[in-house]
Length: 303
Image (cartoon, rainbow, N blue to C red; front, side):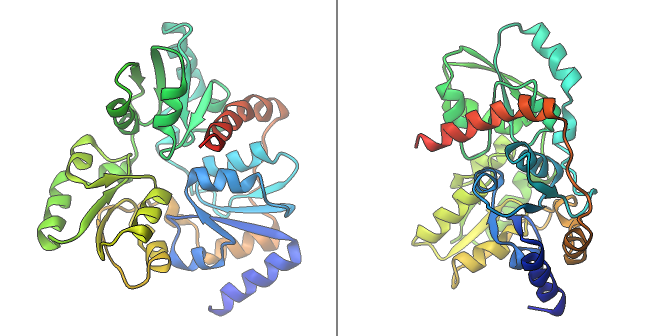
C-alpha cells in the first residue's frame, strides 16, 4: 500500500469508521475498503456494521440507502460528483403521475433510485434479486423503474405478468454493444462471456450468462473455465483478479462509469479527515423510503 492508503487506514481507526466500496471503484479505493460488493451486498452490509461512521465509496443513491437503513449513523459520500445518471432518469413527481395513470399497480424500483423515488415505491430490488421479487408479487401488472433493460431481463423469466417499463437505462452498460462483444469473442474464442442484466437484450443474447456483479464473482470462482470476457464496468476486473488469481479476464473497453471513477483516494481521505459530504435526509423520507428497502432485504433472506 502507498502512503495515502496507509493514512486512510489510520484515519479509519481513529474515527471508528468503516469504508464500503462498490465493485466498480478503482483498485486503490477497493484496497482500503472494509467490504466490497454490489448494491445489494452493500445494502445488507450497511445494516450490520457497528461503526458510527460509514464512508460509502460508490454513487449517491447507495450512500442514501445506507443512511436510510442506518439513520443514526454518519454516512459520507467522498465525492458529490459521484452521482448515478440512471437514478436521475426518474423523479418522484413523474413517478406519481405514472402511478395515477395506472392506479393500484405496485411499483418495483431498482435500488438505483433516489430516496424520494423510493418513497413512491412498494418494494426495491437489485439485479441480483429482481426476477425473484417480481415473481413473488401476486399482481398481474407491475411498474418497474428506472432501468428498462433490467426490466426486459426480468420479463424473460416472468412471462405471466405485464411489466410497465420506465424509459431509463445505464449509460455504461448500454456502451457495451453487440459489436464490441462479438469482437472480443473473436479475439478470445475460448473465453466464457459474462454480462450484467443492465446490458441490452442483444448483448445478453450473445453472453453465456447474465449475473449481478456478485453473481459474476461467484460464477468465476466456481467455474472450471480459465478465461472470461466480462461485460460490466471495467474496474470489476480488479476484484475478479483478487478473487480468482490465475484466471484471465478481458474487459469491454467502452464500459466505463465516469461517476464511479470520480472518487479518488484523496476524496476518501478528506471525507474521513473533515467528515465532509454527509448524507442528510428528513425523518419523513427515511421512514417512507425504508419500507421498500427492508422488503427487498427480507425477500433476499428467504433464499
